[in-house]
Length: 463
Image (tube, rainbow, N blue to C red):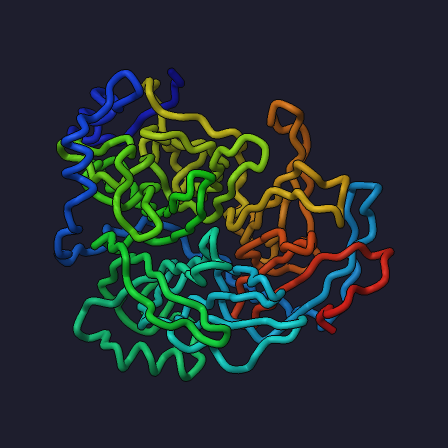
């Protein structure tokens, strides 16, 4: 069992960690318990207030420079792919995620509550219709987007978003914010108090032009912050629900709270019978793993089938974790980082908390993540690409990083890339065409396609 360090733990959390055992193949929950859990409907939500924010010194303010229209030429340390061309599609504002449609179009979420579509390198000026009303503040808003693995048959599109529940943030006000093209404004860094929100998983159908029949299929009933979703090889939805609080007995260590957890759901939002805590008193049955801060990237390892997640630490301590059923990843009991005010997090050893596979000190504010498997950049196969918003709390240091692993998936090298753009990076994905796609996180944001610089420009490239 792995040993990490523990500090600032409340009595409830200490008891949870000390006594944490998970049903295994030798200790299954009873069939009756499993059936009862999966048959029951999710109870109505009660309003959960946000946890107190963490203390931080005043930020260093330095706006990113305008991004060139492109094409932009950059370089990589990999000799086979030394020269790279960046194709830029502008017109986005604070995008979060992208999903690739079979016809080559790209759906992109914007945190203020819009879904945009890019076709042949050109952004449609009109947002996609059918998106639910969103409460946008801080790391809350319209977040991830994913297609069902059988999208060609059912046309299902999944979204994670924050539903406003406080009366002063009405549906009409939120719609007006979206229609006016505003960035997420209320709350931290905005113009007013943060609304009470609930992190929700929704499902709709893509009709070729709009989302129709969008319905909430799971509600965390709590204002979890950052969220990503990915389908595993088992066909289940894995959904992160973040929480960065460092208070005693924090939500990430409370098994009866969805915040700071990775959840596992069926494609209709119900509970799989083989989830690790099904039938266990005091545990939410949707929980797959716990002790997470903000997981801003998730991807399935194409060789092993394991789920990998990139997780932001505080001031240092960003991580990539291999997610395993029923495990505790330690936040905020342990961390390789410091608090934003400089103090260390963690001083005493404790057993039972999982170790990351990759760590960043200082942090690069990890965001999206993808495994490269394509043929456009053959020397990058088996590399992992992650996005970074800033390094060491300093603006204009956004980047992606290319991480090289050996045959045992042990890190041997990492390369910062795109730092010369001085843009915050929110997401990085491999497209079906084998190119890498990057979303910048700015008021005036862009979609960037990374192409070989020595090859002719491909058809449909953004100009």
